[in-house]
Length: 426
Image (cartoon, rainbow, N blue to C red; front, side):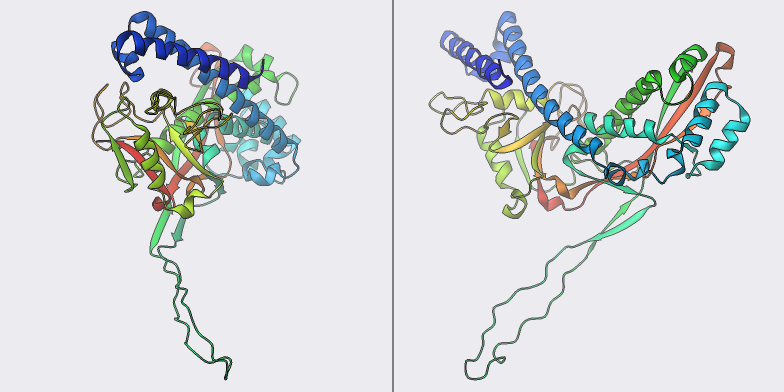
């Protein structure tokens, strides 16, 4: 059975169960989470989880296919300058010295690695290991998939346009071509300057001597070090993604859900109170010019998705459906869309039951962002080229352990806030 058939089957039972609940209690389907019985809550939570699992499986399959294609493309190193083939970190000699330094803590090897490294902040990790980290970070980060990722080698001040040149109508004289109404001269205005200032993150890993001996083996990056790279990447991606979503832009990356940033807002009392009108109004709050972009997308929490799934029309039809067999539906096929727009799920957006908003646990504050929609080509991430490291063989030497510190530097900025709209709490 295909993923689409599984999802249609789950949705069919989901509808039947909600209809039975509504007929039995007289309550709206959305109320099952608050006034339903324990058995009903568990049943619907299980079906929600099943639907989400099928959708994520389809999305992951598409992402893995895309990453596989990228990995096989010779231009991969150009897409990720931190892993370029012309870096000294890509040489076999550098990799061998780095692994030897990690395994033995030999000062000569440590000095040689630091001298060869292209970044004064520490030794750059070998290219093959960095490639694994970068790939995993893309897989784990919805914001990196949605936005535009840049690799830059210094702090930057970027000036963006705040106005367009003027186009005016002019007339020509038939008797004397080339004469007539003169064009109005104008220039685009560049009144907004965005400064990229990196935030530094550190990921420490403590490894036993036995693990290092087995992980590294005779030289290159073995399966054990591949495991370390993947886990470090997962940790980095989660922390970066939190900042790309909720960062305050002052000492942190600027998050897309920064409540004072985007002025085009639609309000809802809470996650549970979201209506179809809220969804449609938020969509239409974004100017038409930005809605045609291939990067036009929703970013929302799983709690918001759950609420939207239960919305019905006045005829009792579900508005959210995995196929287009009914009228007035907001989504078609897999991966799902909301009002015809693809969405990505974020675990960092505030909802009614977490403390990620500015309110206390379970209490959202005014203007906390529940969902964002817009052209994410105007959300840019700036990674400082390369992931650096520091090998510390001494701090935990009495326990036969070596500590590896991995450093990453990144920043994010909303380049045009007019390209986005948010659904926020009242």
